[in-house]
Image 1 (tube, helix red, strand yellow):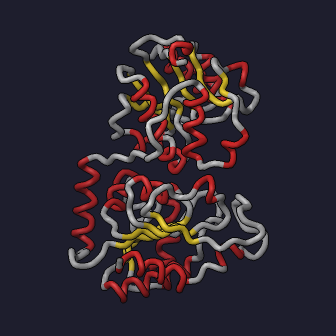
Image 2: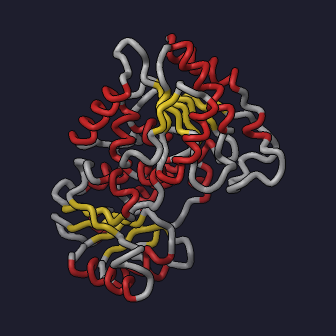
Length: 348
């Protein structure tokens, strides 16, 4: 079946990345499988700037091409520039992790001869071949959903485990930051991630994170690292103010790569459903994932080191940005429940 794709023995392959950090991490089994199917290929990932750290240290990737949607590739003339940039690289095969119409249009206009992706969003005519989306894949984990693109094209997969690699500079920065915080070797390194993109529905409450931090800091004689991006800075300050002396707010103070390296140093990570949750899963770090409005079948952390806390309610998963009613999916998750789970993991 690979021969039916009609590509050279040493092809130039473009993989259009997913746009969100968690989704990007869950596509890494696809990248590994592409390399195993085409060991002599030159593999380029086309990605938005904020997900590039997921790919830039991946040993199965030869190059990362920046999709600068805010600058060089801004919609309009920038779209034509991106098309030209892709065409100039003379790719033989494009594999689209995105289901968007635009993703298929770009590689079609760029005259990539073989364009593989699901036949969604009215883009069948732009794909060669278009992969029929098996309805059963809509009910599976996103890792399997993405791998279905390859199996639909007759390619073999090579496991489901995710790959997340860090640079030596990010690893060193993490060790240096922990030394600055005076995290003692005898005490566990604990982290929380109270934010989540897309609204408040995915977020456990700040006051409960603060109460958890106070109890964990006292029990284990340590300070809790607060993770998040620049938009989470104020949330981190809020949690820290409610747990005085117990936390160190790192939200907005690290690059994404540095955040990965710091998570890798954690003995336990407590998080909402988020990109950093999938980072911890990929790194096989012990974590407690608090899940409410999202679908655990599709986006739960895929790691034996991850423990999910979820209280079933009739309206979940609603997949909404903000809860229109009583936020029962999170309201029913108590501090005691999360604290006890953390203690079981840390004491085991």
